[in-house]
Length: 282
Image (cartoon, rainbow, N blue to C red; front, side, top):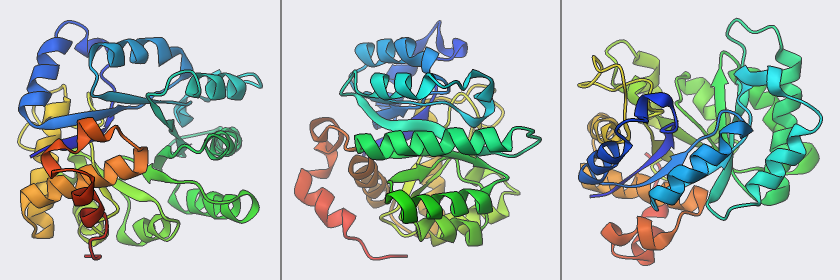
């Protein structure tokens, strides 16, 4: 069995002393590939250095909505340049809207719109952070589709309602679930996770945050724990774990165009990926 952790932040200081051991743990757990997200472009050298150390790491570049103090007229050109500087860049992100206690909503919207334009120009998917902003996010994306055309992407660390989930499914987005879905009182997240079609669901840790059950007491989450997320989701959806792992791997490969030689060995090749990608909706 193999898995893809589609959202990690292993460049954070909490991993600085034992990243080799953390990598051994994710490999032992069957994590065959990782997508490293980016909070702001200054992280790019450190993230690229991690990918140099671990060939199973692909990565993204973008500006997080909680870092609008770093937004400037020059930053879009820098993001686009960095995205084109390394073939291991597979997405623009993480980008989005975070209206929880925010006072810069218009700046967030402008930055998000510009980064969507970069992603569309480069033909890359987007990794979207969305907190307390599902309706305005869906409206903005819908307007972008009408005016400039569609973009591919994923709603990462999703915690919305089934109704909000459907807004983004209708726009063609993938939905990624983190350890939140394993939390006892995350009822709306569980309901959303049960309804996402099998060819649109992804798994992630968002480490070092949000350790899943049964590791929730550990302050540092890590990529190996994406297996707990997958196990819980497979049980919730009433499917075999091996098949669910293979399906989410196929979905990640398709969305991010991940290297097939690293991400399909356990599936028996690209023909299996094509078969899994054609699975019927739940």
